[in-house]
Length: 316
Ligand code: UDP
Ligand code: MG
Image (cartoon, rainbow, N blue to C red; front, side, top):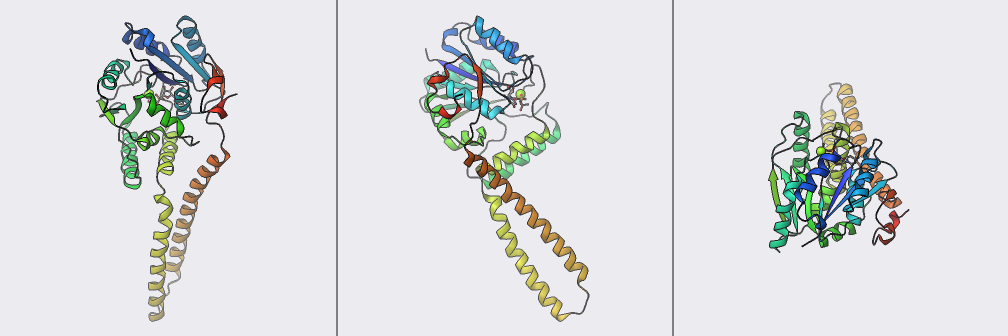
């Protein structure tokens, strides 16, 4: 029987944990010993950590890592993967939007079909999600797939099950600005896709505001394409051409061009600032990478931190 580790990032999830725990226990009731659940408490400010600790005292299949503050879901995934010991390693949300009952079917595929290294999931509907959010999500996927060589699948969830080797490869990508969807498609391997309809979270509230999703989208674009950096060059050619034409026109006519010039100058300035901003974003991301700060800091846990293999800099 293959061992399976499930990494579960949790941030202020006191209402959802018990539903998740009950359901996954039910799914694995006949082979509980093959299961390891790694809850990663991402600096929750409610009772999340206490609830996880209580469960872990009663059930030795539960491991937990608790961060010193909120580092974000990406950091929680990274930490969980670093400590996972299973032959197959899964990632799932605690709010039951990723149904645990799919896990045995996902394991089946990895057991029986050597052609596949990862079983990933994709939701085919966005029902229950605000319309504006769906619109911008679709726009984001269209844009990023035009600009980046790394393909991002619309509707892909972080919920997946991978072989140990894939996990090792993912861990070998040590960037600070982590964007799992990008890392996932960057590493490649053979992926089997599971599709399902969107499911509403079982309890609690989503942690993503529109602004946070916007920042997440920027993270994806900046992390996986440098196309925006070429825009200023194209634009400067265009502006050069226009300025030459205007110069020639002003020589041969006596109409007052003051207002026209003024608006062109203002327009150019707005573009200059926009491009400075774009360069600034890339620069700031590079700056953060160069600083080489730890992706997460663990304050408390019931796993042996000393045997952390590759991620030495994250040890307290
Ligand atoms: N999460 C986290 N850190 C954060 C935000 C979210 O660990 O800073 C966890 C959260 O507890 C949940 C998962 O990431 O298990 C997905 O979050 P959420 O359900 O809020 O996102 P949505 O499904 O609405 O995109
Ligand atoms: Mg959710």
